[in-house]
Length: 582
Image: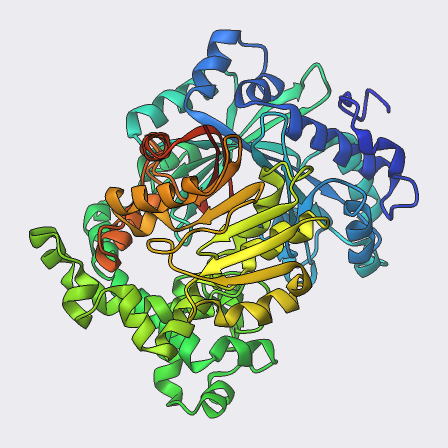
């Protein structure tokens, strides 16, 4: 590895398998070096890598308020299959390819060509780090096969491999407190020696992104570039960062109007999903005239809906009036991987109407769902099979994070695993696929597990799983397992009901048996967490349901005869809480 080109590798185990893996050797080494850095680094170490020498106190001060999120770099495989072949040799989980606008535009300027003629992809590659957390290697991908004959490409590739222009380390601020943000910012550009290098506000994600750079390289050879992502919109500091005056004096009123019109967005997304517009766009229809004919809608009204959703980042609109889905909009199509279509219908349906009685819940403590529908949620769904199927599909649609659960568990000695209230068996299937020598038991109410055989068969686990009908409040939980799963159950109930559920599990198991609780814990400081909005959702749509802090879950578990040993974060602000019976 050449010191002038490459940061010093920390000795990745994958280094010996890069040959014949479909990646140019220099790009492969760069990826492995970045992967080593991502896996080995805490926030403090990552700041120390990228910042000019500025003292341990500066690094620790930044690390107290920021987390290390990912490392990013640009590579040049021959084609998409080549990069996937290479990633297959690494212990990472890559998501579907997305399009990069920022890097594409920069490369187009460097190549002196229209940005529309250039395609740069992004692959987010999740990996488990030395501290047990999940971080990402972010790869920007420019496929050489698609760029044959482009003038200046070889020079650009050589320059990137030498100078790492598109490489950076990314950090996220824990909270959006203006005082904390100002302190972090001043530290970066003051004693940290960094200079502003662009940025912006992403209204679709509601985050402010600030880029920084410094001259030269670190002692390990890394370029001094970093990205800081801050929850919310911070117009004043962004304007100062970009060197221009803030031009939004009406921002408070705009922000309040955006909050007040959130219901409009919910229904617009739900209508878009119900009409199946995303599916027709994926089939190649692009004009509102074609889409209106295909969906049986009025063309002008459909056009206005799509224009609105384009402003919200669901669609893009070309100058000729044609539309295309963004990566957000693609999730509203029914057949795509990770589709959230059914969840959009659920949130725009029963759960939308229940929120009409939110004030009633605040005043009286009574469930808004009960007020609006006359029954508790689970009773209502038991009596309305069509709504129950939508609820189950919606919950499954919002469960993409379940694929990350097996990596958080030690499954080497597991022989039998019981999923308590495991619904259609999706999580249990993920566990069984990761532990091919284990058998599973799916325990849930009779009308719920009706959907399980199809899911288990589709994931190849039906022959290794037994279905046991029962109610965790009234019936004994199957005994004799090494591992018990309780995924998104405790947040449905108040503390007394949670105590009954946990006691029922504990009654049938021996000391040392493990329990994995999957929930969305409420953080102490991260105001951007999904847990805060879902906590209100649980208040509205359950009888006593709530999201809890890790400390509150620890107390519930301890009272029932369990000790909480570890917490492993998952995507979408979820977490696995690992406990054992004592």
